[in-house]
Image: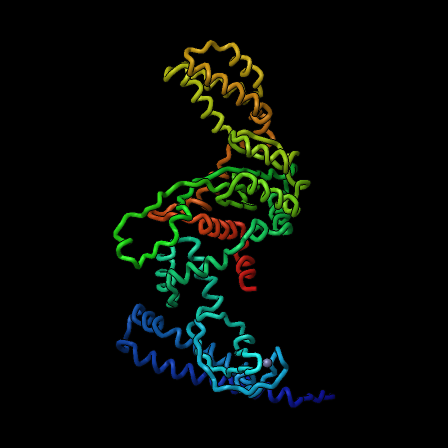
Length: 469
Ligand SMILES: [Zn+2]
């Protein structure tokens, strides 16, 4: 039997030795940590709660210690570096005495001493180890920033800071959290928070599986009111007692966050695809929709695209322009509400009003909008107000004539109500922005909205990666 000679290179030997040295150091660290735990356990027969509490309190000295040992060992060369070639002038620069810093990570505070290099000619200083390690400029590192931001887009900054500290044992002030969130969200556009075409295709394929007809992809547009404060409210220094005692001099206001949502219908279930909501004007919203279309994100040939909205004219204008092929639906409940208002003007609160609405909705349901329009023309107004209401109703139904064929739409599997948009308004806009005492500057509200869209679009990790770059 031939025995294959194992060739061991010098590099292998060195790597193995280093590995063993690291293991040895880590074991020693763990032993010291166990001594600490034993010393702090209240009594030999501790309860689970006592053991848990003791270890919880000490866990970061273990995890941060392990991380520190690994970092030190892996980057021994960089820590011992004596000279550096200046990136600007190419001169050799000597190391200055090591400087300590703290890197706050999810496993705890890692203490690092690293050499400093300063080129006198270029007047530039640098810590090469920081670059190799990918450290953030501030104390708080990216992993903490990401986790804390994810929490801050769910709950107010104060609560997020408190909960984060409680659950992770890592301190991050609400001011810092606010600053990080702003930085992550800066300049986000619909493009940054939208899922990729491949992700959308996958979503469509899952819903389409085993079905005869192409799935219905719904596009809905609407506005949600968010509590806002004007730009003029800026610039008050809270430290000035004279000002603090006074009431705020600005008036709060409610502004409309306009947005759109694409979602798939899977039986009774809604499968979220893409949302974009901002405090913005109509042209901006139209532009964002056009961007989604131009980026080829919507697989129009693989779905039956349907647009459902209330009566607002500007919405239909954008829809017609961007997705002219889509089936259009006037929200049934919105339509019913409209009819109720007209009936009230004409018949007051009598039973007749109710009957008229029921009959009209039934006719619309059966696709007999022509009959309804004719009926309105023949109706004898009971007052000037009623005449106006009847005229308006006629114009409204004429305008949306092709969007009220509710029975045909239902048979086609299209939605009749825009509940999917209402829920998006709630979970994207209201849940986080409508908080007692919270009034948002436009920029802040839009940054928060963009992050919340990213969360529901499943793109928060890529939004954070963009910030990281
Ligand atoms: Zn230089």
